[in-house]
Length: 307
Image (cartoon, rainbow, N blue to C red; front, top):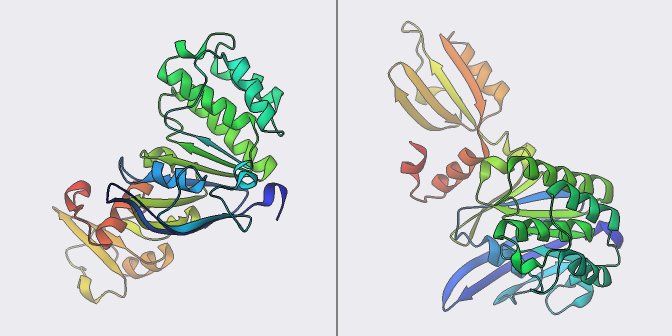
């Protein structure tokens, strides 16, 4: 493959620091024309995994491939990527214009027009020495450079931290536009699952360095449903005999809440036969799916989700 059609593959990645695993046995494939969310709590291993993917860290075992080539110690593969870390890189005596010229010499796909558009949207001073920037301004500057290089593969670590709602929306818009027009790949890490819910095409869940779930968002929305129901006293079924894959049940007075792993049509068809007083079938939020998967894999999270 060439151009913007690159595919990245992580194959059984493991990395430890001082004998403590940061990520363990991580495998997935990332396609072009897609926004991926790398999601999990702080300390889940997201930043370590990103540094492995773009070749900053060498894995203890496993390999990262881009277009079939190993990424680590491979300038050709790395040249197609841009990594926006949680602590951005800059030369202290440089202003944004000088750093822009630096990136322009490294990335031949650099867009002056996009660079100036983003400067205007984010209201960043182009000729102020960057060592005078606040942490939030440095993060915004790194996003400007990352987007302006028009990379095949853009990695953004906690990209929206420190951005106000208007700036956050502007950055999201530019990311979506790039993926649509250039068919590149974007990976964004975040501990804020709610913020990623309507943004990502595909998600990778990490917890304590383990890969919990990798799924397409459309599939994820149909993974399971939260069902809230009030039965008629005269027509209440024996729950355990229903032909449904019921995962959880919680009662609060007459209101019963279930997690059911069937299609919405199947759930409605079965439960409607009993003419319940109230029947609501609600897709799980991304946050609920994450905790549901943790609980399903026997992590102790019951106190976090109220079940």
